[in-house]
Each structure stands twice: as structure tokens, then as C-alpha cells.
Length: 348
Image (cartoon, rainbow, N blue to C red; front, side):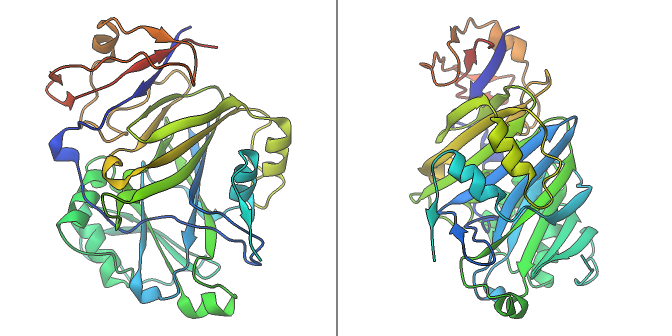
């Protein structure tokens, strides 16, 4: 059976392009300072309709100066501390690392934003919110998360809230973090469990608080039952796409809270390295016969007819990493999508 992967250019529908907001994840170091990752790292594993999203929240030293917010595709069923060194092990797998020396604690919901879940992970306060962009922004700022306010932030939150009303907000208890020995740049890995038919990785959020000309660097690791179909924009590229090794899966499974890691799966490593101005999209992952979503990727508010794209006569290419056979589609597809580059690849 032939499978497809899509690469979409950055000529997007104007109403969906947002502005900056506070970056949700950054550098990670274990509590004892053993290994620090040099850029944003995210691990997403999906199996049988369950996505486990692992990222890191970074301590910046002054709890009043920052907040962290992650848009979610659906309501999570669990939020907990992730493995102590899972993200570091994934970096080691691709050769990119360097060595260097729940209780409810938050205020009641403001009008409009519903608090669905609260917990404390080490010195990190975590809350899951449901609401529109304006309501979520009002809640986090009334409760000390201190995201920047302005048109860019409003646009960014609307960009996500138009697709899903769920957000995860986090902040460090500065005093507790200092008692735990944290210094600026140290972080806590968090695992979010979300029922969803296909994985989704928010990337546009990384543009937040970053000048358009600044380079954004990030690693995204995927673990899926089979090779996934991918939909994303300019600046993101596939570095590895292969069956996950037994050694890697065994190592991941041995970490704390990682016993759910399957016995086999497909390992994908994507690298983001581009100017912030290009990061106006998210990563949608097609799995289990379900195509990736143009809506999840942030390109349209309604799914285009993919049969229409296939009827345009695109030629297949030989697998991930081959030369891309692309076609720039003139005009607007279904009145929604402009400037789409599509590539197809043959199945294994």
C-alpha cells in the first residue's frame, strides 16, 4: 500500500498566522546536573489512540518573569513527571548531547477559563485549562504565570484555541526550586497523556518571544507503531526514520514512569533549524491509516480534499531522505490553502 508524506510551504491562510507567546519548553538538566540538552527537545509516543507527550519546563531563576504554556490537541487524562533521563537518552541516540559539570495549589478559575486539572511536580505548579485564547491569557496572568500581553500573544492563543480549547500552563515555585538546587537553565521533564486519533506536536509556539530573524533549533522524537505520514512546514527536516532498536526501547522503558514504552515501534527524529519567522505551523502525524491533518498543522480551518491533491499527478519519491518531487499549487485549494508543496513517498 502506498503511503504519503507532505511538506507544506509557508504561504498560509492569512487569518491563521499568529504572533509570539512565551516559549513552552527549553533546556533540560537532571536534578543533579549530569546532562543538559542544548536545545528544545520533545518526545511524542502514540499507540492505540493514546499520545504521550514529553517535554521540559525550564527554571529561569525569577518566577515573576516568565510563564510556560503548551497548547494540547484534546483533554489530557494524566500529567506527571517524566523519566529522569529519557530526553537525554534520545539525544544520545542521534549523537546530540553535551555533558556539564500532585496537590492543588493554584487559585480558583477566573470567569471563562475552566480549570480541569492541577498538580505539583517537584517545584513545578501545573494546571490544565479549557477556554478561549482571551480567557486562558487572563487566567494565567491573574494567577502569576505572567505571559506577555499584546496583539501577538492574542493572535498566538487564538491560533491554537480555534482548533482546541485545551492548554497546559506551568510555573516554577522559585523558593522551592532554589531549595532543590536548581539554577537558571535547569528543568523538569513532564509527561502528558492525551487520548487523540493521531499525534500532534505544537511548534508555532516556539516562535513566541523570539525575533523573526533569530534561529530556532529543536529536536522532535516520535515513536509510532509504523512509519508515520508527516505534515509540516519550512525549516523542519527528517534526520532519522527507521525501526526503533531494541536497545533504545529497553533503555527508555527502564527509566522512571516509562514502563509503557512498547516492545517495538518506528523511530523518527526531526530537526527544526530555521528563522523564527518560518515557524508558523505545527507537526501533524498520520498513523494507523489516518492521514495527517491540515487543521492540526495549522494551515487551514477545514480539511482540504486530499483526493484533489492526488489527482494533480504528483510523482512518488523513494522513501524518506530521497529527492523531493514537489509541485507548487497555484491559487487557493478549496478557498483555504495557498502555496502548498506536496511530496509523496512509496511504502516500505
